[in-house]
Image (cartoon, rainbow, N blue to C red; front, side, top):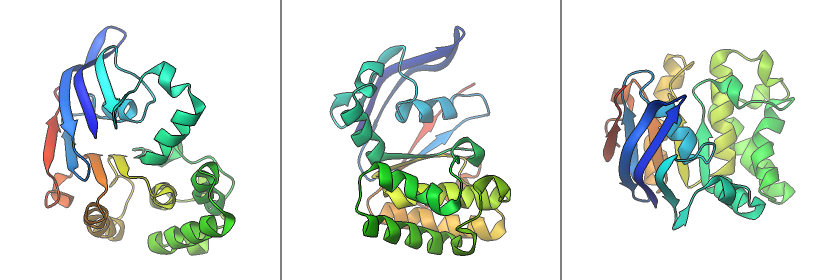
Length: 215
């Protein structure tokens, strides 16, 4: 369970998150709405333990998330196995020398056996249509291929909570159709989904609640 209690965050004294209070139950699909600059990406970064409330608290499965807590390597490793983050721009999260290595990075950090890592990577590449690109360097891919690689890298980790910043960006019509089928399958599997998007129509059938953010 995620509990945000009176969360505030500002950049250079410019308020971005202002007294945000919300409880997100396991298995819920949450839509983040609001114009550009309203704080959707900031909230996703906070949920992933990359920044921290300047006022209020963020509680994740009973633990208050702070900078000090995230410096605890054992806890941080456990936390990042539970929550996955698909960035708006895939270049922000791709850094390995091949697609296969990119998908394997998370499972390797989780300490999974080699055969389990290979199975997860192969399954994710197959599902995202990346098998023929497995030895390509991510930087050499098209925007859509990079986005599919980013999604596959999170899929290979199989987190319980998926946070997504405009997951539809860079995808072509076929990719959007795939995403529209994929997201309900995640929800059916009991995953928690927290999604910022300007295209709510692709996920409106699965949304349980919204967080409306103002600029």
